[in-house]
Image (cartoon, rainbow, N blue to C red; front, side, top):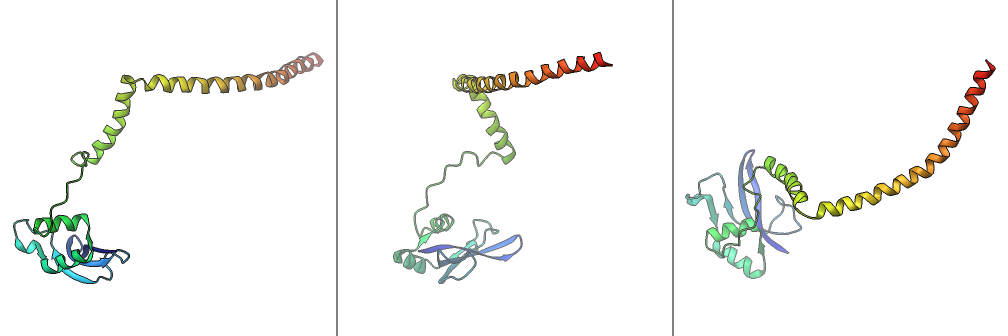
Length: 161
């Protein structure tokens, strides 16, 4: 399958992307069929040099069945070659990662007292606890018998002394 995607270039911490048509099986920065343009994310959005693209060639490859990636489709939408894709729904995006983890742990705790789930969980735990007690009771009498014999033997030893 043909994809219109970004191929990274540039120096460390200074990315510059090529917009290329490539087979989806080829590596990201590897072999490609044709270079369609470039994208420099470090430049401000107002500058024309930020996105350079050959719109005729892009339209040609789209007609041949090449599919753009989400990022490239957004770039093509900015240039008005194709409609902008729908924005994704990520409600956690604005929250820092540290706070995401804390909220994730707090939410189940908040739900536990309010909902009926804790009652069901405690009921599930109780039968599990009862089953080990029964097993423990079965094992305890076996252990008690040798202890009693050991106790009987100890006084005999004391009597001999």
